[in-house]
Length: 382
Image (cartoon, rainbow, N blue to C red):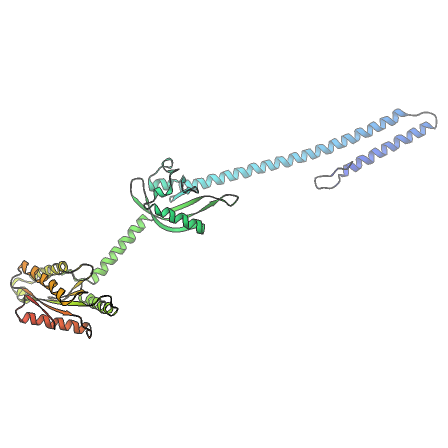
């Protein structure tokens, strides 16, 4: 009989048992032989020796089996204890991550492969106002201000495995718009199969509000830098920039022509001398309002050129159409009746050889001719 131990080697105890049995059998046969020469066959002695040998062998086998059983039992017990410890560690780790997920201040949620919400953390409840039982099982698109964003997000995740720092707008339970920076990635099982997605959203509503406020303030500062405070029109520095752009666009044939109106207030000095500078300021302020109301908001531009002079830049406008604008300004200014004041307006349409200086000069000459003729009129430069 051959036995192997757990390491694949023959057990040395078996060899000892077989050796003992052989010795006992030899002893029994010797006794039989010695007593048999005298005519006595001690069968009982031989049988007894064989029985004792068998008993010793059985005891040895039992002892060996008991030791193997004990060792296997101890190994199984140790494996069981280790498995219990590992299970406890995993449970504590899962509880820890669950607590982190639950108590995180940011919005964290998971989705199934169809885009329905599986889990919703406390941060999400706090920011969006939904309780977990109200939102779990509903489509992710339902939380978005623009439902089409969900398709864009899912397509990006399927192509790249994840999407990071994508800004979008979510709708809170009370109707508020919450702007978030979303990062989302796939969740895979042990077979590397996608079974859902996990998303983290950082609330950037206040950040975006501050950014927008900063943009508005910067725009206001830029506007103040190019605006005349009294008339509300652009200042002369901005005029030089805009008329330069007009010539550039004309060269690129973005429009066929443009015209310039140069406006001067007649007898403005007399008004200031008789009624004071405050009255003069009112005239300038009202004239600024009149000019603004007489031009196209998104195309034309008006400027305070200095003192009581104003310039209007009429893009894609010929002299005839410019005359209509001049008439409108004259008529509205007369309606206010600012004492003996009136307006003299010179109109110049751009010509091929013109630059800024020559264009302004021609409009200025036309304006002085109108003033020399008594004012309260316009003239077109020849």
